[in-house]
Image (tube, rainbow, N blue to C red; front, side):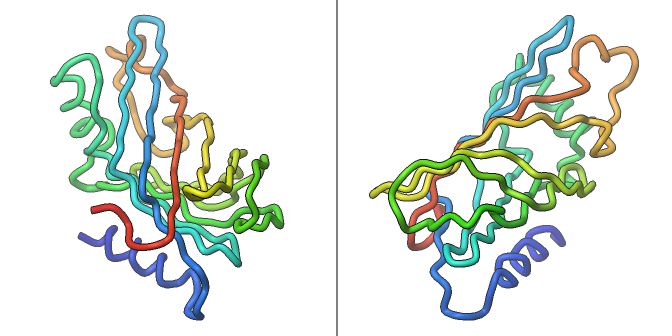
Length: 184
């Protein structure tokens, strides 16, 4: 498909010199749709990504069809086929850079902002997302919680189910970057 190829190009474009790059080794991306008539929760542990320590540039990809949970298999099917169109838009991506001049090799915890392009459902939006970064012996852990408005990404919800699907979805991300190859 075209999107994985583009994502690979983005990873390569993070720099061609001998920069130190770390890859996602563990991930948890979850979302909550808290609508008046229904609460939907799903999570995904299959994200991949890379961060370049010197430039603080990153690229993260989430395979949308890998979300698990939901309130039943039919709801998951509707999510993939009717709303997210995962056969056409299989991945969500966030590509950008950490704004603050933080040294990702020095142990400690800091609040930072990640600025980049968030692409969901084939629609790209420039975003600045506040994150917490913890540099420790086991790697670089980045966590955040932010909202995604469905309208911002061209995701339409039929009137008949608008009371069951929130117009704004809460997303939580927990990524652990380590040196070496990414997870399979």
